[in-house]
Structure formats: C-alpha cells, structure tokens
Length: 121
Image 1 (cartoon, rainbow, N blue to C red):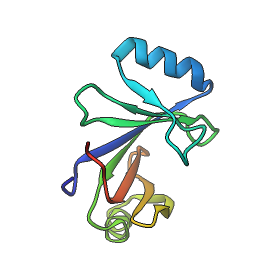
Image 2 (cartoon, rainbow, N blue to C red):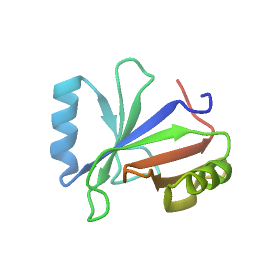
Image 3 (cartoon, rainbow, N blue to C red):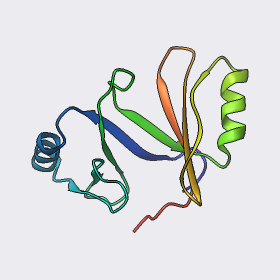
Image 4 (cartoon, rainbow, N blue to C red):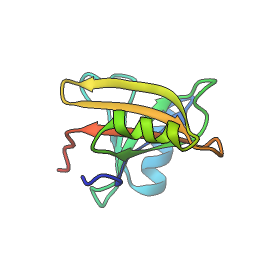
C-alpha cells in the first residue's frame, strides 16, 4: 500500500464473541482468529480492502484506532513530534518485516502507524 493509505482499524471490545457476532451480522464481515494472534480476531470487509482487528478494550484503548501505512515509522513519528503530536507507542515489531506505533495529533486523536509487508489477498 502507498504511504498515507488507511491499512487497518482496531475496534476495542469487552467481549470478543459478542463483537464477532455483532459485526459479522451487521456488516457481513468475515471474522476469524489468525494463528499467532489468539484473542485478537481479525475482520475483513467484503471489498477485501478494509480490515482490522477486534482488540481487547483497556483503560487506554477505548475508541477505534485507524492505522496509516507509512514508508518509515521513525520518520513519521519524528514529523508528528515536530508538528505538535505526542508519541503514545514507539515503533513495535509485529513480525520480522512489519511494525506499528501510535501518536496523538494536537487535538488528542490517536492515530496508528504501520510499516512493512501487507497481504492484500
């Protein structure tokens, strides 16, 4: 995906089974556990472009978080800081070839970043 594309959306949930049933019935999303990510079922929209996960709700994670594809998380976090953003989570590995991070913009909105390989199939 090109730099700047929305690549993933996490939805915080208190009850994974209930959320899986709700979103699959409401939107027709295909939702399934992915090996290696137990307790974090991934959803895929019918267009096969949009997707995300049903993440455990926590005190610090109460609203959906969109992830934006970037060429370099390090460069993007540096620019976010330079322009008034605050880093929430530094660059964190997902696999050997992909990473994520998050920051808040000057208005307090949390945005996730993704760098790495994406399986678009």
